[in-house]
Length: 633
Image 1 (tube, helix red, strand yellow):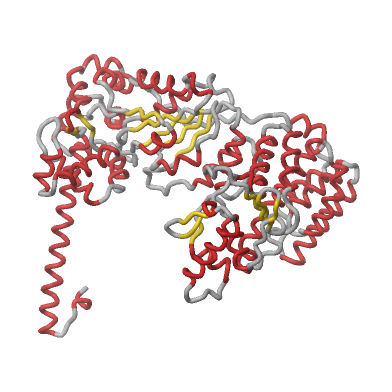
Image 2: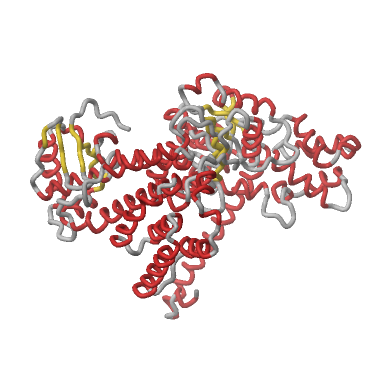
């Protein structure tokens, strides 16, 4: 949370809008100012755009000089509040910065998150108390005296829904504690106020059943069934129907004693990806990662390790291997998410990842918030004081990772990425562990496990050449071994001859399988800017084991500083490796890939030039014949 110094200003909007400085009320009387301050408070600590503020203040009747008018209102608001720095200016609008405890909505969300975390952990007394304190922040309808049609149409209903969700969560806790009799009257009142919320009807049915009022529970089901049919033309949802069936059969699982017995169970997730068979050659890196994750200073800071390397080098496998090694160190479980940063599929939305984590940690699906900020708050509250290892696989950026980081010591995080994610080092003190290709001995060991010890011993020279042609890259080694095993005989020498005579990348494709070396490279290549792609093409032409930015710049006929920047981008994305003395190196397969993409680009350019020539000729003919180019196409 941003540091706002010793601010004495406090705000309340869950009811009438109130502003206090110390013990004194601060009157904000102008209607437009009240709308603006409400809009800023609803997005506290987040930038609010000029357009959003204009809608909040004027709805559809926006004045012609809207920006100037907003500046005046904001200036006056700063004067009224007496602390101008509370409202900051951003590139697109304004932001009101304040700690959560200085706003009733902030306190409500913090307490609600604490209650959901305690409920999932089976700490029912704590959960009930936290939910009660959260709901006590409400003094009436939100923004009751704010005259903003936009806020009442868009924002207030969402706040009300959130309040009802927390009321339902509290009622669940009370039911789990055996307070069903005392809930009947409040639940009847809620069904009258919100007749289409089936969750409340389900809670009323269960409270009545547990209180020995079986007939009334059936009547409650009939009431909601008829209401939904008459007003909406639908049947009750699965929760109500399942509960109705259970009540009809007097299912013992509905009894309070069974619920109380199960309520103390704390969910321990175990989600780490399966370990790749024949995992070899990474003992040193595994030891380094393990030491970083369990270092003694983790009592004060949460360790984050970023495991980066080129496509196919085995980052996910190493992360899974380390996670299994450290099971005892993280007894509260392991969470895993494939973020799809370099995938043919779209990156996973953070709301889905967080929702999955919350369900794995025991939060009932109906109680999982829909907004990312609320999900993150519950997630961090759940992990507070627990020891959980979080593995975030295939991250595209630091921004994709940050919402998924636990907020307190005890837990730890492994991130795998094709990029270095340097900003995580700056902002989250992450430790970068680069992962290269396998050492020659480890590559030979892997092939021995995949092909058999006898095959390797009998064809040792050919196996060595195969490992070299694969550049000791684990993915390439596995594909080559799969091709050999699927053949009629394990003739490594013959396979190497074909391997050498053809296109290496085409050879590294398992028949009938989409997993290929090229496909793995393509996903990362597609994300490179065009100028960086061209630098990569030309780097593949430079002879020798390594090269300088100057050598590539000469080939490209561009300034050296531009080439140096592009090579750094390639190094960050693990397409080239940095060497001492400001030099760079291309992995053998990536050099082949660079040359292949260059040929394809040249072919595409020639095709485009040919098409342009044809179109020009077509236009010239059309001037003579009257037939247009569009007609020819």
